[in-house]
Length: 84
Ligand SMILES: [Zn+2]
Image 1 (cartoon, protein in one colour):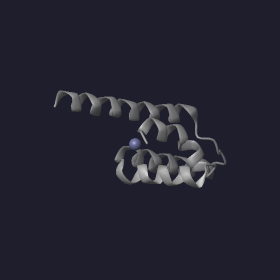
Image 2: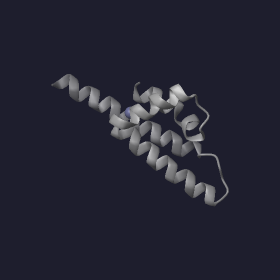
Image 3: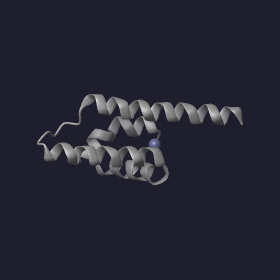
Image 4: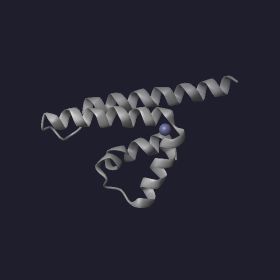
């Protein structure tokens, strides 16, 4: 599974709306991918904060920002690999 695929499932993953198979795949990705691990932790924390304020939806700007950060990192590591 790639980071892009992981991110596509992220909100369903956090909502627990996915199948067991998919959940296993996402968990496996989290084991080796530090970046997505950080994203999940940050997102979970954010959700908790918003839950305290009775807002359940993850705000779209935040989601976009996380997505962009990951995309930039992925692109960057690809470019670095090419240079080697
Ligand atoms: Zn990842």
